[in-house]
Length: 237
Image (tube, rainbow, N blue to C red):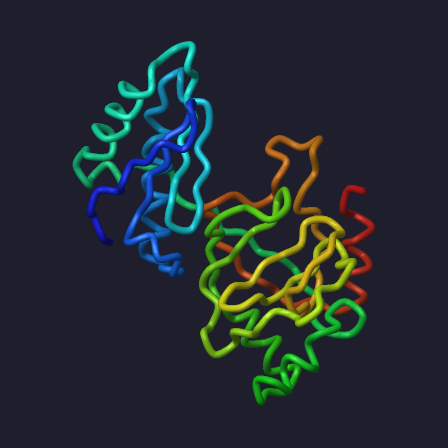
């Protein structure tokens, strides 16, 4: 893993931004793993003034309480904490392993057939290869609880729809470019929808409200329509 120190940039009066790599926007799994390792290290050592950590693909936003600490001492603490010996990485919490049931195709995966044809695959093969992937929640964004998942087979990358849908069903599992993701709630969207999960990914009454967190490992498990219907009845409204 690249151990070059991240750049530290002022994000707001109460926040620093740690930026990793060259800042060119390229998806890099090694850099993203470094972001999550550093986030876990900071979270484990968190002083009372540390308000929030928001990891992204190649950056980590650190919010602090300005009533308790000034910006420069907060930055100095961050750098000192991240400069600790690498053995500290082995002491952070292990990432969770989460299975997401998905019914592929049909009314729940309206783009599966066209996406498969575009890739030169059968719909079943595309579904199987998508489910065979091992994914990491690289970041949460776009909408509350929306997981951007790294680890998609590069051969399955697909362009977004030329015209986004005005309504995408909650739980839709989709590919957008070189990423896969899950729509947590009904919303507009332009990703290619392969299937749908009956799980509730975002519930503001839950603690935490998001079912998936940055750094989680995700595996999709194919189910049929009958299983989807049964699990949907068990999921909270």
